[in-house]
Length: 187
Image 1 (cartoon, rainbow, N blue to C red):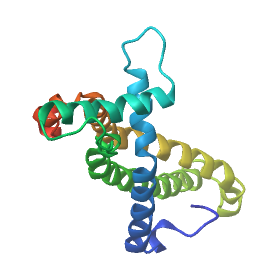
Image 2: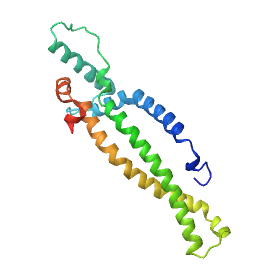
Image 3: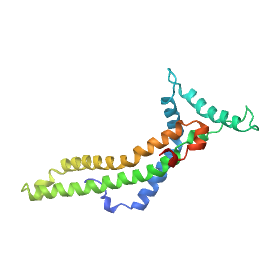
Image 4: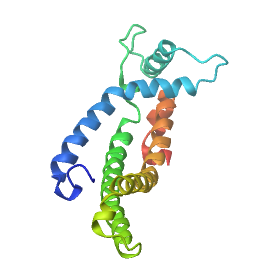
Protein backbone atom coordinates (compact mmCIF):
# COMPACT_ATOMS: atom_id res chain seq x y z
CA UNK A 1 0.00 0.00 0.00
CA UNK A 2 0.95 3.67 -0.22
CA UNK A 3 1.32 4.21 3.54
CA UNK A 4 2.21 0.73 4.84
CA UNK A 5 4.68 -2.02 4.18
CA UNK A 6 4.69 -3.00 0.50
CA UNK A 7 3.14 -6.41 -0.20
CA UNK A 8 6.38 -7.55 -1.84
CA UNK A 9 8.24 -7.08 1.48
CA UNK A 10 5.83 -9.06 3.70
CA UNK A 11 6.84 -12.55 4.85
CA UNK A 12 4.04 -14.48 3.12
CA UNK A 13 4.70 -17.72 5.04
CA UNK A 14 4.17 -16.02 8.40
CA UNK A 15 1.32 -13.88 7.11
CA UNK A 16 -0.66 -16.79 5.67
CA UNK A 17 0.34 -19.24 8.42
CA UNK A 18 -0.71 -17.08 11.35
CA UNK A 19 -3.70 -15.68 9.49
CA UNK A 20 -4.91 -19.13 8.47
CA UNK A 21 -4.57 -20.46 12.01
CA UNK A 22 -6.50 -17.54 13.49
CA UNK A 23 -9.15 -17.67 10.76
CA UNK A 24 -9.62 -21.42 11.21
CA UNK A 25 -9.88 -21.11 15.00
CA UNK A 26 -12.49 -18.38 14.62
CA UNK A 27 -14.45 -20.56 12.18
CA UNK A 28 -14.38 -23.54 14.57
CA UNK A 29 -15.55 -21.33 17.43
CA UNK A 30 -18.38 -19.61 15.50
CA UNK A 31 -19.55 -22.49 13.28
CA UNK A 32 -22.22 -23.79 15.71
CA UNK A 33 -23.88 -20.36 15.63
CA UNK A 34 -23.95 -20.50 11.83
CA UNK A 35 -25.51 -23.98 11.92
CA UNK A 36 -28.22 -22.76 14.28
CA UNK A 37 -28.89 -19.69 12.14
CA UNK A 38 -29.18 -21.78 8.96
CA UNK A 39 -31.51 -24.25 10.68
CA UNK A 40 -33.65 -21.35 11.94
CA UNK A 41 -33.91 -19.96 8.42
CA UNK A 42 -34.70 -23.38 6.91
CA UNK A 43 -37.42 -24.13 9.45
CA UNK A 44 -40.74 -25.18 7.89
CA UNK A 45 -42.87 -23.64 10.64
CA UNK A 46 -44.95 -20.48 10.35
CA UNK A 47 -43.12 -18.96 13.31
CA UNK A 48 -39.34 -18.87 13.11
CA UNK A 49 -37.88 -20.86 16.03
CA UNK A 50 -35.79 -19.12 18.66
CA UNK A 51 -32.09 -19.84 18.89
CA UNK A 52 -32.77 -22.13 21.87
CA UNK A 53 -35.42 -24.04 19.91
CA UNK A 54 -33.08 -24.35 16.93
CA UNK A 55 -30.34 -25.71 19.23
CA UNK A 56 -32.72 -28.28 20.72
CA UNK A 57 -33.91 -29.21 17.25
CA UNK A 58 -30.41 -29.80 15.88
CA UNK A 59 -29.10 -31.69 18.92
CA UNK A 60 -32.30 -33.63 19.70
CA UNK A 61 -32.75 -34.62 16.06
CA UNK A 62 -29.35 -36.34 16.26
CA UNK A 63 -30.26 -37.99 19.56
CA UNK A 64 -33.61 -39.24 18.19
CA UNK A 65 -31.91 -40.63 15.10
CA UNK A 66 -29.35 -42.48 17.23
CA UNK A 67 -32.03 -44.03 19.46
CA UNK A 68 -34.02 -45.19 16.42
CA UNK A 69 -30.99 -46.77 14.75
CA UNK A 70 -29.61 -48.45 17.86
CA UNK A 71 -31.59 -50.57 20.27
CA UNK A 72 -28.86 -49.97 22.88
CA UNK A 73 -29.30 -46.19 22.90
CA UNK A 74 -31.24 -44.97 25.90
CA UNK A 75 -33.69 -42.06 25.69
CA UNK A 76 -31.57 -40.27 28.26
CA UNK A 77 -28.35 -40.64 26.26
CA UNK A 78 -26.30 -37.43 26.32
CA UNK A 79 -26.79 -35.16 23.34
CA UNK A 80 -23.75 -34.71 21.14
CA UNK A 81 -22.49 -31.49 19.64
CA UNK A 82 -21.42 -33.15 16.38
CA UNK A 83 -24.46 -31.85 14.45
CA UNK A 84 -23.37 -28.33 15.33
CA UNK A 85 -20.21 -28.85 13.28
CA UNK A 86 -21.79 -30.18 10.08
CA UNK A 87 -20.28 -28.49 7.07
CA UNK A 88 -17.18 -27.29 8.93
CA UNK A 89 -14.87 -29.50 6.88
CA UNK A 90 -16.07 -27.93 3.65
CA UNK A 91 -15.82 -24.44 5.11
CA UNK A 92 -12.25 -24.93 6.32
CA UNK A 93 -11.08 -26.72 3.19
CA UNK A 94 -12.31 -24.00 0.82
CA UNK A 95 -12.51 -20.83 2.90
CA UNK A 96 -8.80 -20.83 3.66
CA UNK A 97 -7.77 -21.01 -0.02
CA UNK A 98 -10.46 -18.44 -0.87
CA UNK A 99 -9.04 -16.10 1.77
CA UNK A 100 -5.50 -16.60 0.47
CA UNK A 101 -6.73 -16.01 -3.08
CA UNK A 102 -8.55 -12.83 -2.02
CA UNK A 103 -5.60 -11.34 -0.13
CA UNK A 104 -3.08 -12.31 -2.81
CA UNK A 105 -5.14 -10.79 -5.61
CA UNK A 106 -6.02 -7.73 -3.53
CA UNK A 107 -2.46 -6.85 -2.62
CA UNK A 108 -0.87 -7.65 -5.97
CA UNK A 109 -3.63 -5.87 -7.90
CA UNK A 110 -3.49 -2.83 -5.65
CA UNK A 111 0.25 -2.40 -6.22
CA UNK A 112 -0.05 -3.08 -9.96
CA UNK A 113 -3.00 -0.74 -10.48
CA UNK A 114 -1.37 2.01 -8.43
CA UNK A 115 1.86 1.67 -10.43
CA UNK A 116 -0.02 1.74 -13.77
CA UNK A 117 -2.12 4.78 -12.80
CA UNK A 118 0.93 6.75 -11.60
CA UNK A 119 2.82 5.75 -14.75
CA UNK A 120 -0.10 6.89 -16.93
CA UNK A 121 -0.30 10.19 -15.05
CA UNK A 122 3.37 10.99 -15.62
CA UNK A 123 3.46 9.69 -19.21
CA UNK A 124 0.11 10.59 -20.75
CA UNK A 125 -1.10 13.47 -18.56
CA UNK A 126 2.28 15.21 -18.74
CA UNK A 127 2.51 15.53 -14.97
CA UNK A 128 5.91 15.63 -13.37
CA UNK A 129 6.75 13.28 -10.48
CA UNK A 130 6.12 16.06 -7.94
CA UNK A 131 2.70 16.86 -9.42
CA UNK A 132 1.75 13.20 -9.58
CA UNK A 133 2.78 12.81 -5.93
CA UNK A 134 0.03 15.21 -4.85
CA UNK A 135 -2.53 12.75 -6.28
CA UNK A 136 -1.21 9.75 -4.28
CA UNK A 137 -4.16 9.62 -1.83
CA UNK A 138 -6.62 9.61 -4.73
CA UNK A 139 -4.60 6.98 -6.60
CA UNK A 140 -4.38 4.81 -3.46
CA UNK A 141 -8.16 5.03 -2.92
CA UNK A 142 -8.92 4.21 -6.56
CA UNK A 143 -6.40 1.34 -6.63
CA UNK A 144 -7.70 -0.15 -3.38
CA UNK A 145 -11.32 0.00 -4.51
CA UNK A 146 -10.67 -1.55 -7.90
CA UNK A 147 -8.35 -4.22 -6.46
CA UNK A 148 -10.92 -5.07 -3.77
CA UNK A 149 -13.61 -5.55 -6.39
CA UNK A 150 -11.40 -7.80 -8.51
CA UNK A 151 -10.33 -9.85 -5.47
CA UNK A 152 -13.90 -10.20 -4.17
CA UNK A 153 -15.18 -11.55 -7.48
CA UNK A 154 -12.33 -14.06 -7.67
CA UNK A 155 -12.81 -15.25 -4.07
CA UNK A 156 -16.59 -15.61 -4.50
CA UNK A 157 -15.95 -18.22 -7.18
CA UNK A 158 -14.80 -20.49 -4.32
CA UNK A 159 -16.92 -19.17 -1.45
CA UNK A 160 -20.40 -19.40 -2.99
CA UNK A 161 -20.24 -23.11 -3.96
CA UNK A 162 -18.67 -23.85 -0.57
CA UNK A 163 -21.52 -22.08 1.22
CA UNK A 164 -24.15 -23.98 -0.75
CA UNK A 165 -22.58 -27.35 0.06
CA UNK A 166 -22.00 -26.61 3.75
CA UNK A 167 -25.52 -25.18 4.22
CA UNK A 168 -27.05 -28.27 2.65
CA UNK A 169 -25.04 -30.39 5.07
CA UNK A 170 -26.19 -28.25 8.00
CA UNK A 171 -29.90 -28.76 7.36
CA UNK A 172 -29.86 -32.47 6.49
CA UNK A 173 -31.61 -34.81 8.89
CA UNK A 174 -29.23 -37.30 10.55
CA UNK A 175 -30.25 -40.30 8.41
CA UNK A 176 -29.82 -38.36 5.15
CA UNK A 177 -26.55 -36.91 6.41
CA UNK A 178 -25.20 -40.36 7.27
CA UNK A 179 -26.22 -41.63 3.83
CA UNK A 180 -25.54 -38.60 1.58
CA UNK A 181 -23.71 -36.03 3.71
CA UNK A 182 -20.35 -36.11 1.97
CA UNK A 183 -19.58 -32.96 0.01
CA UNK A 184 -19.07 -34.97 -3.18
CA UNK A 185 -22.57 -36.49 -2.80
CA UNK A 186 -24.15 -33.05 -2.42
CA UNK A 187 -22.55 -31.61 -5.53
